[in-house]
Image (tube, rainbow, N blue to C red; front, top):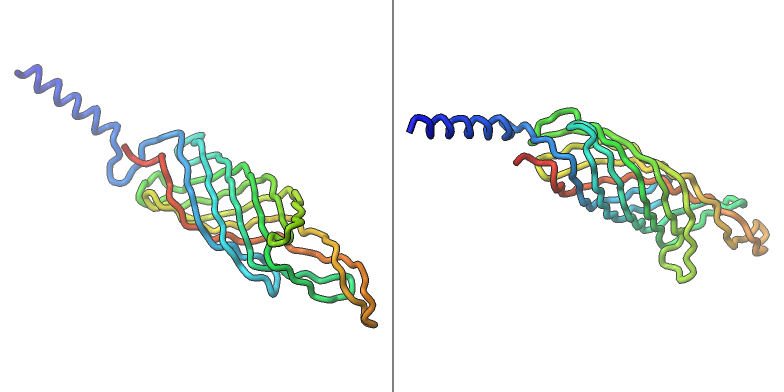
Length: 203
């Protein structure tokens, strides 16, 4: 009987030493998240839109994780200025991206984990997403981001750095003569995201 009690005590002690206490997490290498959010393009006159993202991750250590962010964003409109100073507007712009990311977590507490990170990769920009003859421009860009994970929920803000595009436009000179011009379209946008984390939590 005493041997059985000792065995049970040792087993219980082993479980306690491997189970998270007071919000501390158990280290797990694989995790991920899916998010919805608001995409806010930079530049005056631009309207925001929606975004969707998913990001599988691998933890190099408990406070450092690498991942692959796959995101799509659609913004209601963008404006640009042509070579004559006229303002041009399109109905919609879309951006799809594949970025390698790195996040650093400031605590190991499962209940509240603030983080900061960044990433680099490729963006596919569709200048007029509602047009049947869409043209996708591939741009190399990156992000800086910060936020927090609260249990299985994730909130964050991301600044997407994307080079501007030069697009051809038909416009009119001051005399009203139609001319072929160029417009500069800003691609950089800010993403405000709310998501759900899977994996990486306590046992």
